[in-house]
Structure formats: structure tokens, C-alpha cells
Image (cartoon, rainbow, N blue to C red; front, side):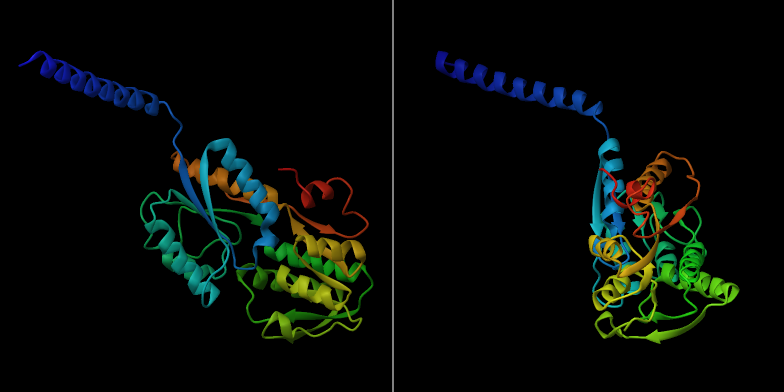
Length: 301
């Protein structure tokens, strides 16, 4: 081997040894790095703006615990079936956990029967039927409905119209049951008005109307009031401040988001997180900027 060949050989050997040292160092350093977990959040298709505070809570927990979060809030086709199909696609992407805001609880429950072992599931809303091992975090939909009925009755309203679109999700239908129960107790007369789409909702024309979902609440407020409903989008809160919306019933969406991600992580660490029932609150123009309502409606990330 000539002198030049030896120099080339030694140079190549040094390069290979340096590369091997770098790889070993990366493995040592990598072993001490915090694991990044992947969690998908499947919202109910109602619209991203209605879940802005919920996302603030999830994102806060994600920053604290090194979680990569993906949000899905639009679905193609019938929302209940499409959400269940999206759930299947999500776990095929090898995620660690999922947070569900159900459109159709039965469809999601059926899909979860096929879910891979170890998938951590938290539901923001009612329990899914015949599904074990999930955690639920939400205010009681029935109690929220009762609170809204009380707000209507306490305003001196003796009759109102409840607007249904035929596209109500699981939460909204359970709110409706609580609403009807309390209307009967408080002696408030009501009639249901069906509108196949939000665009076809009737103008209130001064008659009190009740909406069961944020999208319907927001649409009715564009026509006029008084509107009683649910939701905390910027538009709905502006309508409340202006007086078009008479009262809203809300939970702390920020807390729901924060706690839902923590429960997923708890399950991934091998524990069984406990279900949590959040408080619900009645919001009016008079109390929306007072403690604790201001913190619930306008949380700081």
C-alpha cells in the first residue's frame, strides 16, 4: 500500500469512526428525551369557532406534557357515520389516544369495538353505550337543558318555540330532554319548530326561541331575539352583550379541553382515569364580565 493510499485509508476510517460516535451519542441523548405522544381530537362538526376555548385548554395541556395534537372538525357525508369512519382512519395512523365529541354515540361505540388495544379514549359528552375503558368529561346535558329552561321561566316567558334542525347530535338531544322536563315543571308552554337547515330557520319576530346547539343559536341571533341557547363563539357572546341573546348555558370548555387531554395521558400511563362531571352556568349580559363568568368565557391561554 503506497503512502497516499494509507492516508486515504486512514482518512476514511476516521470519518467512519466519527459517524459511529455521532450515532452513539444521539442514541444516548435520545434515550433521555421525553416521549412525544400523538392524540387526535374529533369535534362534533358543529364548527371550529364554537370550540375555541376547548382548544385553548387542550393546547395548554399539550404544551405542558409534550403532546402532538391533531384536530378534526369537518366531516364529509352524514356527520355521525363520517365521524366514526374518521375515527378508524385516525387510529390507523398509529396515534396514542383520541378525544371524542360525539355526533352519534352508537356509531362511535360500534367503531370502537374494532379499535386497537391500548388506544386511550376520552369522551367529552355522554357515555358511549357498551364501551368499557373510556373516560367521560362534560357537564350533564340534561342539567344544561334544565338550566336553560329555568332561564326562560325566570325571564317571565310563558311560551316559546324550540328550534330543531333534525341534525342535532347526542348532546343536543339530551339537552332537549332536560329542557322538556323542566318546562313541564315550571309551567312553560313550548312548541317545536323544524327547519331542515340553519339557513331555513324562521325569524323569531319577537317571540322567545330556544336553540339546542351553538350553530342554531348563532343563526337565530342574526335574525333577532330573544334567543336562549348554548355556545360561546365570539359572535354568540357579542349577541349576548347586545341583548339579542337573552341567556346562554355553558360549561367551562377550557377545563373540558385541559382535563380531557390529561385523562388520555393518564390512561396511557396505565391508570384508569375517573369520569368528571363539570359544573354548568347560566350567562346573561349582566354577569358575563363578572367573576367567575369572565374566566370561563374569556380564558387566558
